[in-house]
Amino acid sequence: MQRNGRGGFAALFLLSLAALMLAISLAVSIGEIVIPLQTIAEAIANRIFGASFAIKPVHEGVIWDYRLSRALVAASSGAALAVTGSILQALLRNPLAEPYVLGISAGASTGAVAVMILNLGSGVLTLSAGAFLGAVAAFGLVSLLAAGAGGGTDRIILAGVAGSQLFNALTSYIVTTSANAEQARGVMFWLLGSLGGVRWPDVFLVAPVAGGGFVICMFHARALDAFTFGTDSAAALGIPVNRVRLILVGLTAVMTAAVVSIVGSIGFVGLVIPHAARFLVGPAHRRILPATALIGAIFMVLADIVSRTIIPQQVLPIGVVTALFGAPAFAFILYKARRPV
Image (cartoon, rainbow, N blue to C red; front, side, top):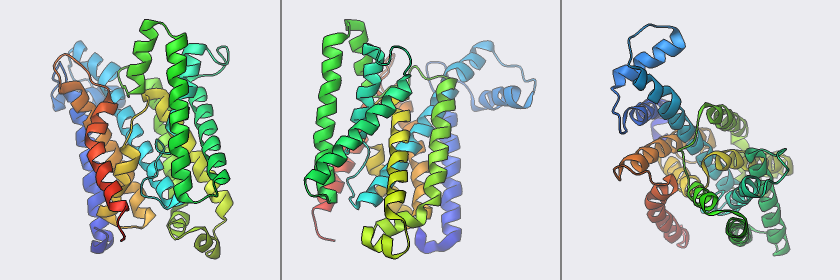
């Protein structure tokens, strides 16, 4: 779409924004109790603008206490994961880079589970803080392993796989040895990705993190363009390579930790969505980043709808749904990456 110039990109952006609003509306409408879109609009007008539409209390409760907050968390999480994937793919110059491949998500999961089950921090550490510390520890370990192996993007990916296995094993060990049956079932469901328990405080955590992270990334769009040609090229263009890389990697850890601490591990979003955005709008990150955020948000909201409706009277972990769509796309990317361009 980049070939159509600014007008084509603006039209695509507005279309994507409208699609996101429609997806959120459908997520609020669809469920065991079907709520008309008009009722949703009236409920929002009553709460935000002080209107006085007559709405059934059960509908208002479902909208405000359950579905709207869930849809907003899904959209924010999808946008955050997709943007972090774009950042890492640019920094590492590897089409397979994403927070889960690099072990950041596995470390965040270990930190969160340690707080949940082991009471790490004796009540001082929150779930989000534990996830953040775990994400930082995982990426630090992956960086050390990659540096010891001689550096290079391929070494970082391999070190990330090793780090993911290590932290996944630690998570399993904690759950197996320290959790009771009920805790283990809840944690394992959460680790596969769950939006079932999200409420408005979760919106107020993940939405600012996703929005703030996106703004910071947009300020570094030119630097990300330069990184795609290598660190030497970026330095030649006047980019402070070490400082920018530190900021963006730290931002990736924060955004991933915030998402994992609320919804658990949801794979493939950060891997597949940046490639779809790149195909639609071209290689420039001032266009990739908005497209990635919007497509990621839409994808996650739609995946949540599928997870709640595909099996009657049962909710699938959202990570299962994203994997069903993401795994074939990952296989295609892997096959394409092995062939010379």
